[in-house]
Image 1 (cartoon, rainbow, N blue to C red):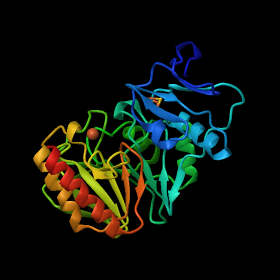
Image 2: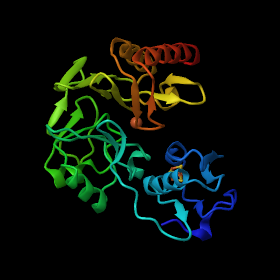
Image 3: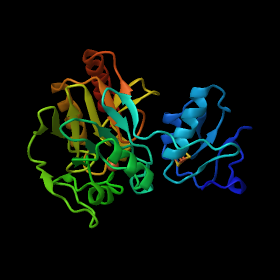
Image 4: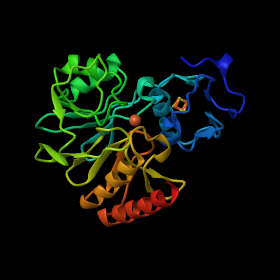
Length: 289
Ligand code: SF4
Ligand SMILES: [Fe+2]
C-alpha cells in the first residue's frame, strides 16, 4: 500500500500520488499517460485526472503497479475489471509483478481454451475473474525474465506450461513443454505461432496470433520517442548481433498489433505500416549498436 508519508515531492495536487518505493518500471505512464510521467528515475503524478476516462485509467495504473507505489486519497473505486479488453479477444491481465520488473501479461480468450502469455502477480481476485472467463488452458512464457507467478496460475488452472528450451527456468516452475529454441517456428495452435527470436536471452520467443497480434516479451516494442519499433539494445543479456538478426527475422511475418512485456501495446493501421516501422527500427539499431 502506498504511503502518503513517503509521497514523492514532485507529485502535483491530486487525489493520486506516487511514493518513493517506485522502481521506475514504466507501467503507469503507458497505462495512464495523461496522469503519470517519468520524473528522473521514478514516476510522478503530473496532472490531476479530470475526465471519467482519465480517472478510470489512473485507477487501472494503480492496480497494475508492481510495488503498490501509487496511492489514492478519497473515495475508493472498485478494482478495475481485469482482464481488461484491448481488442477482439485479447486482454491485459494487470497486476504486474516486481519479480518480472513490472512486465505486462496478456490473455487470449478462445473457445478452444484460453491462453496466458507471460504471467501476472498471483492475486486471488484476478484468478477468480480468469476462472469466470473460462480459466487457462495453456501458459506461454516468452523468456526467463517474465515468469512472475506463472507457477501459481499453473497450479490454479492445471494448465500446460510452455517455456523456451534455451532459457533457464526458475526452480519454482514446472515446465510441461519445452519450446525448442533450435526451431525457427513452432505451431502451438492453428492460430498461434511461436517464433524463436534469440538475442535479449538465448531462448527468447515471440508469439504471433492470427497474423495480427505479436506478443513480443522483451524482444521488441514501439518507442513513442523514436516513433518506430525497436529492440532494447541496452537491456540485451545474450547477444546484440543475434537480437538484430531476430528483429530482421520478423520481416517474414505479418502482424499489425505489437504487445510487449515492457512499454505500451501499439496498434498499426495495417501490417504494411508495421513492416515500415520495423524497417525503421532495424536501421536505427544498425546505426546505434
Ligand atoms: S507502475 Fe509503479 S513502479 Fe512502475 S513506474 Fe509507476 S509507480 Fe513506479
Ligand atoms: Fe527480459
